[in-house]
Length: 244
Ligand code: ADP
Image (cartoon, rainbow, N blue to C red; front, side, top):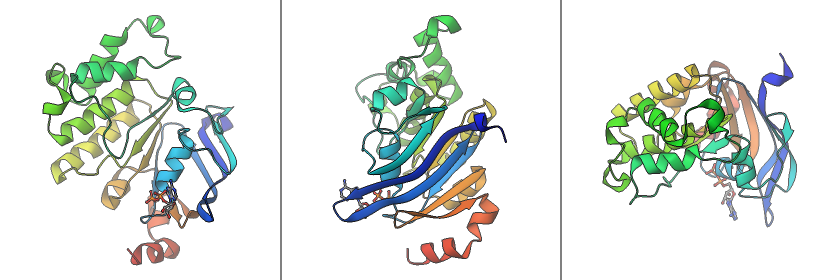
């Protein structure tokens, strides 16, 4: 394929904490307009990977390229300025602010030329809320919304940044079955918009339902990589999950 189709390229990524190799020479490639899942048992290094990728931790080794440019050990605001938007395992929203105001924070990322697109920050935020089905709650305080709605607001905030890569850290955590179904549908519509998504997720049926590509970590190492059909029947993956 065209090398321009690779949005994120990670090579030999390493992160050690004292003597512990939380990430051990991890490779990962996310192609444009795909949903790529990063999975693995507890303690396998997923959160560490996300934190290194988004600039919260400095890698101990390896390289990251994002959008065709070196992105190794860049500060979080630099990466968000280049179009890396993320959600968090534990929702991080301003609970005493409205949904609209929270999403507008996302729409104001540096490097986003809103005037050229004619939308403006508020219009863009409203359109993101509409996309996740919460336009009618625009003026509600986030803290007054049920948990499943708060997850959607967080996705809308990331979406409003018009991201080149959307990083979702366990978006299904705490959702009920109905809400998980809605999340699957939302992820498919995001892909339909042309987005590129890296999702860290524990829920295997959800991963199987949405992922084009899966990378599996175990003890900080990549043990499998491929389509859901390839990865989920890989004996190394089955063995890694048996201990859970
Ligand atoms: P996962 O997200 O897959 O559950 P983590 O990335 O949280 O895995 O953890 C990978 C390993 O790194 C674990 O052994 C964990 O204890 C260790 N670890 C993670 N963060 C730190 C830290 N800040 N300091 C020391 N050890 C850490």
